[in-house]
Length: 178
Image 1 (cartoon, rainbow, N blue to C red):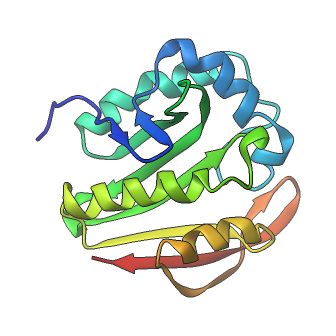
Image 2 (image 1 turned 90 degrees about the vertical axis):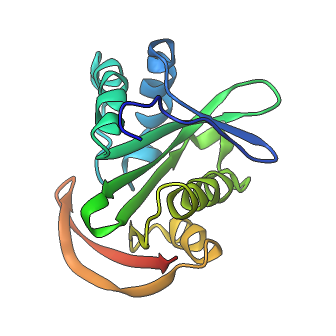
């Protein structure tokens, strides 16, 4: 399994594919939007020049080492890049953490749920994972609804777990077992 290319997954409305370097300007614009960065754990704002290229360049190696699987969320109809979805893998424990972001123009259309469901299915079915968890800032209720739609159970709240832009944030933890 090691050394194989990043997978491509298809859903009714989406294609989850490896990022390409030419996606970098769109990643910088979409992920760098304040509304997206404000509720993600790792997306910077403002999004620095060159950061998207560096991030995309790391994907193949992270997948080859079975540490992270990151895929572009694109529309099946026209190939437009609308976001990202990924699994941070701990293969020794057969678990992963799901993460995702969707660009503001495509919010409230179910794309995060559809893309995440495909990746969760891939994690359990192809990778043989036993547990997939996800976390969201308590003020990001939309992300919590995505996790609930995936069948994840709320496991608890990590109070003041991270400092985002000068404010301590609670993280709500969800998970689902195979």
